[in-house]
Length: 353
Image (tube, rainbow, N blue to C red; front, side, top):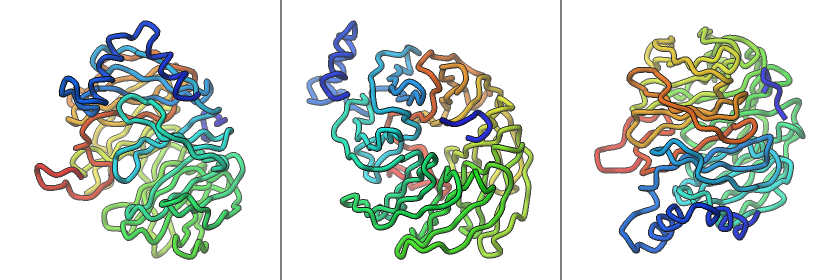
């Protein structure tokens, strides 16, 4: 379990859907079998991980209500799409497993056990490697993504937290909250390349578009820092807000958002100038967020309020909140994903990034 500064099966799910959710089940059935022409991507949901409740909430974004909740393994923290976009991978840290879910409904498709303490997780851009950071047990695991064969378990001090990959899929960078540093690993050999101090309790990390620098959120401070990869040194400090935590590229690839969990703000950083150009105010410890497919809103977990908030990008106003479970952490917005999840240039019109 993090402090605020540092960071059941299919039958049970179906039963939860059936209780008082007949209309929603009809929609899911049509999406699964094409009966009404409604695709799964047209179901406007947000899937939220409730870390301290061992549950997942499914939220109807149009109605702004939680439609149902189902139980998963203890302490689910983060969630990502598979490289092909077909499955949503949820990691349960205490029960040492990955659940592969339907991105629209949250219904479980399969699970992989014996993935030890997968607090944070990520695929390399080429889809060859799958990496997990065991925050509680102090190790980084590098797997071959095709069959989840463990290539190497690397014990490291301490508290490996978030990760980022270079575009070439050669290197993974991991923040170490316990030693106020970042570490770089060669994915092919699993060898440690270097470590470097960056500031107190580093968390979110992003490889910048030039592939020469990293942006790192310092949860124990009130800023993000730019780290030169070749020099292995901090070259710039960007004041954001207390508890600067996680980093998310905005639609269009020109700005990123960083959540300031203690300040109760979210800072927009311009990637051209590497300076804060806008601020969103969201109470309750904003943590993880995701964007709607049209790029007009983002939804953010309010870690200390048991809620998620929908925020209008243009007006910077909170449009509403939805009650979920205890300590909501990871969040995923379903839809045809025209929104970039990297800081690469936008894809040509009509093509999915």
